[in-house]
Image (cartoon, rainbow, N blue to C red; front, side, top):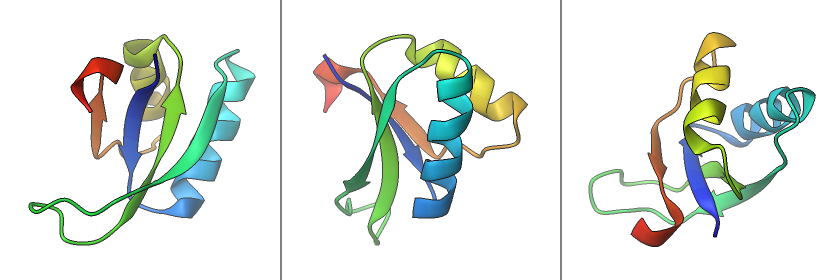
Length: 74
């Protein structure tokens, strides 16, 4: 099951991927289609597990997380 972390840009997504890799969390940068409430496309990371830990790690490293979803919610 893939979980999703939404980020504001490709640069932030790549930076976040590198930070998570240092913490042993594998992730893949992906483009996220626009939603009605967000307007434009954004980027995110797909990860298999450890979603909440990953979000905490990113926030502690000054990466703004725009949203997150468990695999069964998207």
